[in-house]
Length: 337
Ligand SMILES: NC(=O)c1ccc[n+]([C@@H]2O[C@H](COP(=O)([O-])OP(=O)(O)OC[C@H]3O[C@@H](n4cnc5c(N)ncnc54)[C@H](OP(=O)(O)O)[C@@H]3O)[C@@H](O)[C@H]2O)c1
Image (cartoon, rainbow, N blue to C red):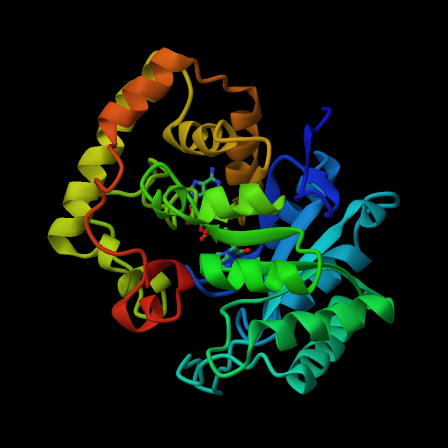
């Protein structure tokens, strides 16, 4: 299989058109099977996926160590394909809490990077980004610290995550920015208003997460699905009570379109984000080879004008019930205020 590629912004690397988001391989959406997770990373590399996205705070280093193991055990030739995209900055606690906010001080950036390089077992990180802009540290200082890591050879490119348009501009005025990682999906179209025009003006790419809205629009969520208390979705407004039922009605409308095209709902969701522009690389949050294969099938789905109109009618912008994060986490999103 020949994987299509896209370039992350005008200054970033060429990457596979779909990236692998590894967060779900740590216990974020319930438990994941370690052996299957590693097999999924290997299968992704084998299929030509190059971009592996993680965060040092995903289960407190667990996710990076898992990727490190996957890279160490990858069949010959596959390891070299991998490009690592790493988020840092979230301050956790031993009980798994997120209450510490974010740390974007240069001294912290260097410290976070030192640990990530060890856990991943690599000599450089390909794209390095703070997960949320630290409100107490000017973005210029955080980005400047990553630029120094580039000079020393520890990082290749600078990324951003969930930054406001104003912070994107300030960051881009400080150093070249490869991409902005941000939520974008049929059901989550906030970035179309201000963020996407800004990144396009500045030549910054997008790595889109939440393309399935945490599985909500995958077509695989049953109406009576229960989530463990440790599962992100147990606390996500979109998965609660009437919101969930409303949102699953939208999924059924998408399913009709998918069935007419002989594809799955998840494939429609990935194909739609892929269709939004060559500057956008959707992240696939698969943690099993089966789900990965389904997602990769989206590369063969072409959406024509009639399909796009039908999707718009099935799920109009702002049709989702519930915000994409609980209120406390919404406060950290630069896009929302
Ligand atoms: N920058 C940020 O703030 C941020 C935030 C969140 C995530 N991310 C990144 O984005 C990546 C994607 O994560 P996400 O949660 O946003 O992904 P998502 O695609 O919205 O949801 C992933 C979930 O969808 C379910 N799913 C069902 N069918 C699937 C299929 N065919 N392929 C893939 N998943 C399928 C999976 O659960 P089952 O396995 O149970 O089916 C999976 O856990 C993460 O791994 C992370 O790297 C970044």
